[in-house]
Length: 279
Image (cartoon, rainbow, N blue to C red; front, side):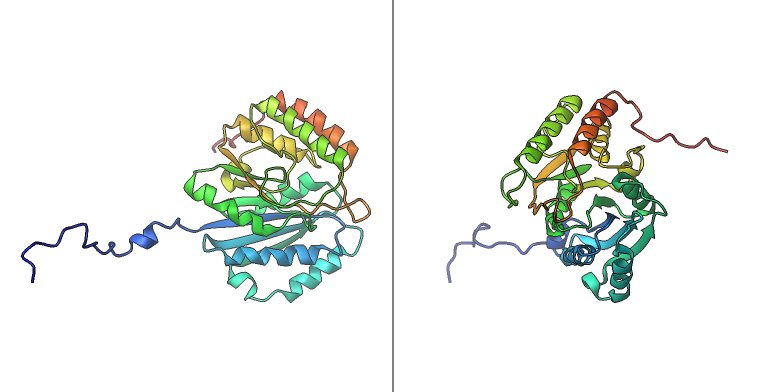
């Protein structure tokens, strides 16, 4: 047997009990806000796709709030059928569901505001009821809240690293122009202001006085987050856009309205809800 003592370097010490678990971020919860209008053929598939969120160890609870914005087609029946098909095992049992309906059509922004009133998780994200976005991309946003102290994370369709369907050059240029003007207005360097996938801390989002009823909600939310000095991050996401024949709803009129909205909200100081007076 050697007389030389064993060096410290050659005898690694076991890690303290529980250190591996302590290195993992604590789980959080997510409210998914789903405005729906005339998506009878796609809404069930879109909602089923959310089941992928249940696989994440970073999510302990997922609340899905579906708001039917007075659809005129078979969307209400499709939602009722989907609701009836839900089982406790969906998404590893992490899901809670709420189904609401507007008595008159009020627009995407109004649907988001209605859903947001019911949100009670730590984070909230907007998810469209079509199939242009896939919720698996939401999984890469969550760590930024847990590890980078993000206040908001946007999913960009224009950052490299994910796929996108080749469609509508002029529509894409319009998105770039609106993003550039929005960045100019609020001194950010975002690549995709018009993205649907915006994940925000729920309490922050609920403290912002959102007023837009339609697609103007996108520049409004972006500019007001910037004015609140939120820590905003971007991650690349995939995008499978639709043609108008396939049901795409946004058009050049919405682009014009978004342009005016950028000017309006850049000049507005209505960025935080006022607390009701104490009794």
